[in-house]
Image 1 (tube, one colour):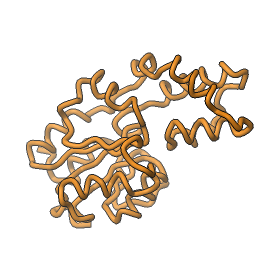
Image 2 (tube, rainbow, N blue to C red):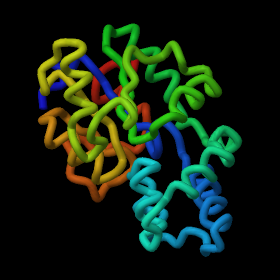
Image 3 (tube, one colour):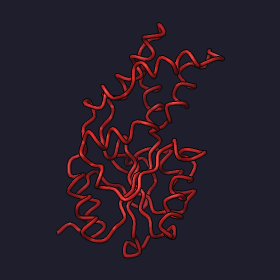
Image 4 (cartoon, one colour):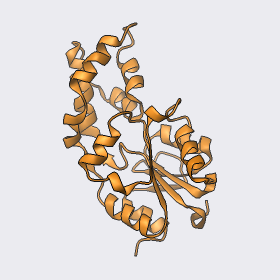
Length: 210
């Protein structure tokens, strides 16, 4: 893709902006143990990392026809107490500042639902993004391209004017289906326009690393 055409940089949350391995594992382990189930195995963890909460609960409780009792329990548990276990990616704020200084639109496209606002608040990132699109704002979450298409429509952007940074195959599929540029973050197995290991690498690719 032509780097000079990019006008917006959109970030996935989990695995890109934050290392959420500990927080997500603790959250779902508590849910599972509340219903007498064993904690997450590695295959389950990899899968739920990409999913919305609703999809994850469907996946973790396939034997239950009525999941209302699980969702009631989720409300009692909440996610707020697990936010402290999230680790912000080194260089994220610095990259966001550089993006703004160079005129880029900064966005988030995440399969989180109602926790994103609290996460941004806790890490003092509320003013670092021009647009935030969660799974709760669209009919179809990633891998559907709806989140990226919504951002495109809101700012009148063409597909080649967006770079989406993600770490999962859901992110790759969303980018592919939206026909936008894709940078795979810390996941060299993903086919992408760029494979990066740090926020500094993204700055270098965009030529804003000075």
